[in-house]
Image (cartoon, rainbow, N blue to C red; front, side):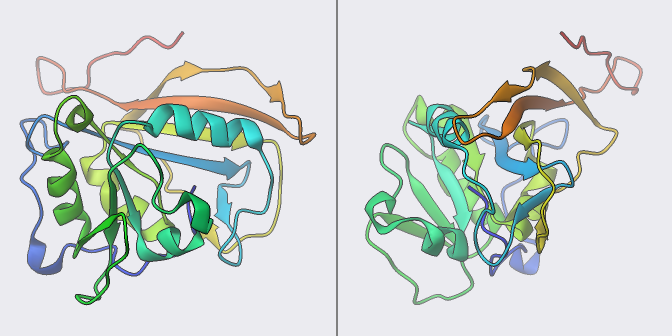
Amino acid sequence: MADPQDDDPLRPGGGGPPAPPGGHGTGRGAEVGLIWAQTLDGVIGADNDMPWRLPEDLEHFRATTLGHPVVMGRRTWDALPPRFRPLPGRRNIVVTRDPQWAADGAERAGSVGEALELAAGSPAPAAGQVWVIGGGQIYRAAMEYAVTLSVTEIDLSVAGDTYAPAPGPGWSVVEEQGWRPSTSGLRYRILRYERRRPGPNGGEAAQDVP
């Protein structure tokens, strides 16, 4: 669902929710996840759109985020089809610097940190998981809070102007679905990453990969 660029990737004045022990999450026990689709080259958008059609990924996105708060930038909100704005069955929180911005069905946050704090205050059980859905700058700003990534990788190479954040060495693939054919003719697979937990001696705990 990522839109290429969004207008507020930063936490003004260093604000935002305090991280829990371990340095990740929202500080209220909610887990932060990022979800996106990308090409083999990491492209997530071109000209304010996704340069592919993958119905199965849209269904995966819906099944994963339904019932949970979603955080997005203003341009991602604007890119949603009007009939899906706000995304139904989810608390929609939009990050924008514009203090006058308002839209039916959405809540405004002035920073990614503020948005995650709002999301963590959602009624249970929705507050247990918060999903960040784009765009590119919002993903990068939210990575420090994230504990899980849901990545749909598409067997496709196209030109783009926005790229997914690259999971660093602190992340492990904990679930991997094999390549599958889409009704659109493309191949895709879904990967789930988790942030490595600190080990007992300050190192990283080993994780099994199925």
